[in-house]
Image (cartoon, rainbow, N blue to C red; front, side, top):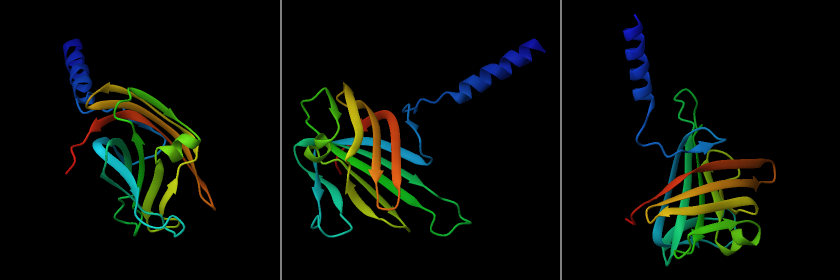
Length: 169
């Protein structure tokens, strides 16, 4: 009986461990991807005075970090999907950084969401902190604690994890 229990416990521990664990911790549900690209930059695609603001990652000389979250895949609910994105730039020669206030503007830190809801598009991040430390040339440990202020509500995003290098396609 005791041998069976120990065997069961060992199997449970083995299957609960994952080699793909990014150590992602978040206050929001859904699928989260943490990546960064080299030789990139964040570019505004349209007039900043026209809503919705659109941003994309293009060729450049910086590191661009990308937090993306997708949620709402309930087949019984129409149009419940939401995709969120946070992008920001970091000097490739840096080994660590900490952004707040004016740093968000200087380093093109944007929050964007796409959903069947309002508001959509990108907004400049203005409140909170984003900090990171280089682990290797392919990995960074980053903590995001930001507040996104919309006219009708506030979105808190608290996420930490390992960002991995994604090759430019």
